[in-house]
Structures are given as C-alpha cells and as structure tokens.
Image 1 (cartoon, protein in one colour):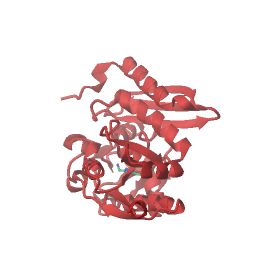
Image 2 (tube, helix red, strand yellow):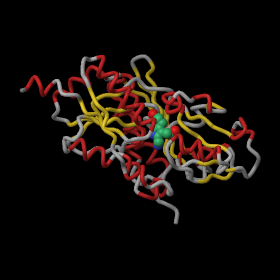
Image 3 (cartoon, protein in one colour):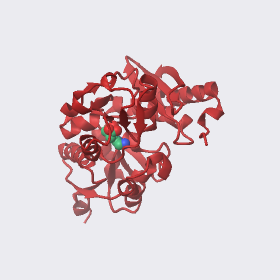
Length: 309
Ligand SMILES: NCc1[nH]cc(CCC(=O)O)c1CC(=O)O
C-alpha cells in the first residue's frame, strides 16, 4: 500500500493561464528529473474571474492564490506553483514555500505600439498597466503620459495593446521568456530605474509543512541563490506591506558571501520615490530585507502609506 501511495503522481496545482501552466510544467520537469511523476490540476481563482478592476481595489494579490491554497490545505493537490511575486508575504500557517526554481530575468520590458520605446511616446499617450509600481515609475520617467488600468493575463494585455486600448504597456521579461514571446518587447527597461517587483522572475513551489514526500522533492529542486534573494525581497515587502496601495519595488543580488538589496517606495503619482539599500551575509537575507523595509518606513513616515481620498 505505502509503495503504491508514494509512487502516485504528485498533483501540481496552478492557475489556468498559459504562463501559469508553463510554469507548472517547469516544476513537473524538475520533479521528473528527480524520478517523480506528476499531473497538473488547473484551479480557477477569483483574480482570474474579475478582470475589470485593479487588484488593489478588489482585495489584492491574494485573490490569485486563495483557492489554490485552499486546495493544497485540503489535500486536493500536493503542491502549488506560483509566480513568487504574486504571493502575499504571510502564508496560511500550514503551508510553506518549499522550493524556488532558478530565477528568470528580473527586468521589466516596455511594449510600445509600432515598435516605440517609452521615450518615443507622444505627450498624452496612454500606458496601460494595473501595477501601482509600474504606474509610479512610468509617471516619474514620463509625467506627461497618462496611465490607465490594463488587467488580464499576458496574452489578454497584448491583445488589448494590439486593439489600440493603449499605446504601450509594461510586462515582466520573465513571463515573456517562459512563453517564448520575448520579441514582442520593444525596450528592456533598466532595472535601476524600473526597479522590479519583489520576487519578480521567481517561481515558488508551495507545499504543506507536514508533507515529507514534498519536502524531500523540494530539497532536490530548490535553487538556493533564488531562495535567498526572494527571502530578502519578501522580508522588505513584509516590513512595508500593510496596504497594497503603495507602490513598492525591491531587488536583491548575491555578491560573493553577501546579499545586497535595493528597495523603494513611491507615491502613486511618481513625484516622490524613496530608495534604500541593505547588505548582510547571505544567511541573513530575510532579516536584512525586513530591516531595510523598517528603516525606509521610519524615513518616509506612516502618512506615506495612508491612501489619499
Ligand atoms: N502579476 C502577474 C504576473 N505575475 C508574474 C508575472 C511574470 C512572471 C514573473 O515575474 O515571474 C506576471 C505578469 C507580468 O507582470 O508581466
């Protein structure tokens, strides 16, 4: 019986978008190289159903994960695959991030109509994005443009751009690379200016804390450098989160034995951008990120995080 049990395919839960399924297939391939068979279970989330409003209005990024985490807790799936940047900083108590796949390119790209770069857009042009971070950073770089909410998965957004709903949009290069469509990008944005979202480009495998088979499988899949940088960035986010109405960005890199982080918070209109850096031994990634977030929070003051009416 137990032999049969341990060789049953691992059920991998994921959202149904092309990108999400591609990411789940990457985890399936990693499991296969460890001798584990698996099957993909697609789960529809609230975030996939409500497409006409920004996430910050309908309850934040947890809407993409709640139903998947419930399936994991209830044992209908054995692991959940997420874009790490879509995960809230606090997970359900029975779940943990067991592994991270090697990180993709962390940068944002601009996709302009007619091959345009961000600097080519005429004043008053419309940049479509649902991300508060991207809106603030676009407004800082180009205060003469208009930002409008553009939601939906990568394909939907590209279609809306094609249909003329906006003149340009920003997406993560990681997602385009995984979909094999990086050539749609008209400009790769400098990550020092367009600082990425915390954990952008990283794929996380979430498991039940007490699942020994998945703990062992995750140990075989985990990329330590990715895990450390994501821990630093999520530590930073955890210190700042509170409301999901403040644009936040953070990027950590490993430098020898150390880990370095640059993080920022911005006003939604991009007129105020406050940056901070941190550095510590790699083993203190999460604490270093959290500390940088607390220092930044103290510097800008609590009023910075209160939504303007
Ligand atoms: N919020 C949606 C989302 N979550 C993860 C990615 C891209 C893949 C990644 O960052 O790993 C995207 C799309 C985008 O921002 O372009």
